Amino acid sequence: MGRGPSIENRKNAEDARRGKIFTKLIREITIAARNGADPSGNARLRVAMDKALSANMSKDTIERAVKRGSGADGADDMQEIRYEGYGPSGVALIIDAMTDNPVRTVADVRHALSKHGGNLGTSGSVAFQFKRLGELVCDTSAAGAEDKVLETALEAGADDVVADAGRSTVLCAPEQFEDVKKALTAAGLAPLSADIVMRPDNRVAVSGEVEETLRDLLDWLDELDDVQEVYHNAALVD
Image (cartoon, rainbow, N blue to C red; front, side):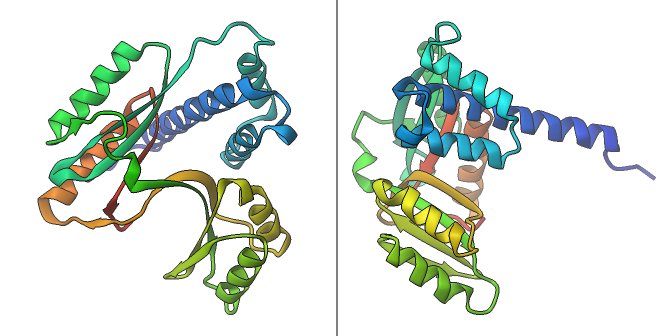
């Protein structure tokens, strides 16, 4: 009778996944720190550092990334690149990358898309279907939590709160993100996740083979070292 993966193999897989997440977070901090090493005056850096701390990254590692990005610890040759394109059945995609080799990165992204029935588009071809918003997800499974999130978020300047299956997604302008996050945390409603994202205006339904192919494409893109974030307009259930 066969046995499942050993504890060691599972640990190695988890370490590899954790390492990949840390790599992406370090790149985000490095790029953000170009606009100033003080998070109190650099909202993007503050968000990136909060995400890293939530992922249990050490403060020493975060500080090294800040120093590198601000130029205090050697040159940084990373570039930010946004790709726009289409997945299977014309699903709109925005792919944000950070790379020291744009030729390699665009080839990797183009290959991933073509393998899954998609293609790269021109700049602006799909971005008009998305808005840049603060997105904070709170657990509202406890009695009264949904109403509390709604009231707290709107008072702090949020634009909308979408409730669904024990969770509430708070949406706000990027400029209001910090105020809304602080208000929720102070009210004992610390978000499960909080980030500034590209959110689609409308989502398209996908199912069957199209959904399977799209999920495989998203996994493929996530595995690319240079890809930081992928946004799409498909209605997928996590």
